[in-house]
Image (cartoon, rainbow, N blue to C red; front, side, top):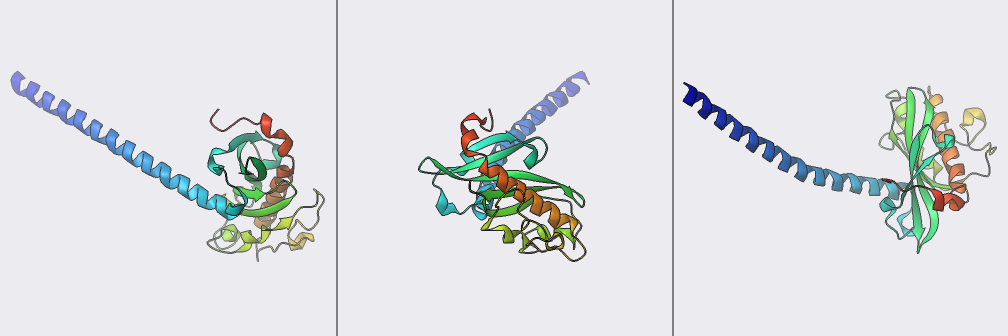
Length: 206
């Protein structure tokens, strides 16, 4: 009886060890694959908000952390586009805290003179069929920021039409587009402050 129990115990231990080793190996392989896919998706998103022909550095490796109320609470990542070591634009993570159903996460590309190259929503919880039109897969509304310049923080054009600005609101949903317009405007204005601060910003991962 005791001999049989020991035999089964050894078998179970060997099986557990083998399973653990196999799981670890699969995890390592899939982790690398997932990381490569995530990096590719991020690069594709960057190219939607800053034209790829403007810069020649590895934008994903030019990452800095910033904390500024203009971008929302907490730390945000800022990626600096360089052309032959000269900063030409930034890709900025920003938060619109005042969406209809909570915070809206954005990626905004802008130069340092107040021109927005593009913006994309990366996360939101807005109402399906109404506020979710901020998603590119549902509407081209988010593309209307491209090429628009912000004169200053009092630029009245940077508002939805209901508030006297240039940007459309959605039928039955004004809060969501208003929140996004304001967040993109704040991020674009923030980009103008970046050049003299770059040498003091901590790199991501430090």
